[in-house]
Length: 349
Image (cartoon, rainbow, N blue to C red; front, top):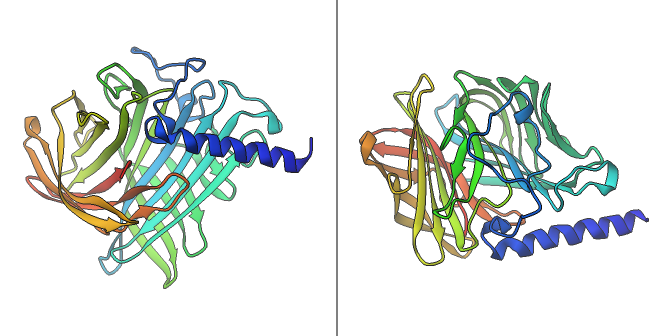
């Protein structure tokens, strides 16, 4: 079969994935009955679970970082590798049903740089190995002997970065020991994080190289059908408070106007408390006009059981990801009952 025909098949696969966005964001609510499904009581195994799970339909390795340069200027960084499967298996070469997509971004107070890569599995262009850990697409890499210490790089037409991440705490498991429910009907994913990274390295911006330090948060998640078919969007918050506490909270929006929420409270030593639907809330306070949309970029986030009542405001309201499936992603500043920095992701706007 000719290379041109293989490329045509690959492009059709990408178009099918994009068209599926109508069924839950990016097709996350579409039928996945032939794939494996998350189950309660799963025994995570490392380093194996840092690697790919081709029998599940979707998976990601998702890093966000809050950074500061030598002058005190605040910035943010994103590095993401997505895996999506059209069949629950892996095959060598062009027969692989695994599709890969990479997103990278840098956000400053007055600029947002973003780029995207797309690859087909099985030919070496993209993939993940567990030991030693390596996640890559083209020349973008996140790799190290273990996930505790990794070097990460990516580049686009007008920016790039090379940074090192060092874990200063344990892995965190969300929901019920890593079984993270996403809907009242029981849809779920496997979900753990490394929210204790420190970061140091260099951003390559149009102004020149910028040395930065800061903190980073890795999310690892895999599933096959994590959203209900009627769930159309979500808002995801990661917060790193100045006292060392971390908080993850998300709100999933249904087409009937109802919401489903979950949250994880993370002590500085890694002790966690999971909060069920309804405990965490996020209320939009102000919007920014971006990409022809009114996107909420200032929020009131509350977790009353922990005394959290904060304002979460975007560093740059124009942090729109102009990727194949567009969304908003950027660094935020936190004030109120707790102060700190974090990241916000919003889809469906």
